[in-house]
Image (cartoon, rainbow, N blue to C red):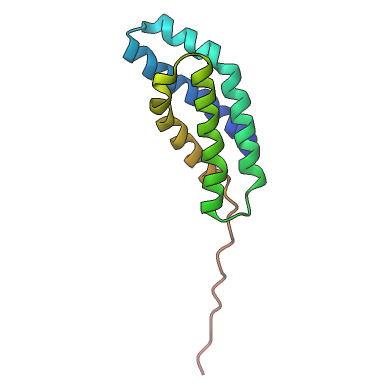
Length: 124
């Protein structure tokens, strides 16, 4: 799957996990979960597309640089959205699934190097 599409999919999964955590913590029930998931879906998809594009464009960079390039913007977006909607108390809770999703996106979009070929020798 393309990293950009995977980023969008992970964004949707991330908002559902975050909404579930907030709904459980606030005793909001299924209606609260559904409302937070629906309201957060569009920003989650847009953020996922952006982070997926970063992952796609940094394929050839070292893993440590890619992790910074993917995780830092993801955490900044989650923080901004949390503060704007008034859930700043849950921003640090939202960091957990966000970092997990970012780590998976980095690993799954990493450019793989071919394994070296073994050369057989015939003894003399």
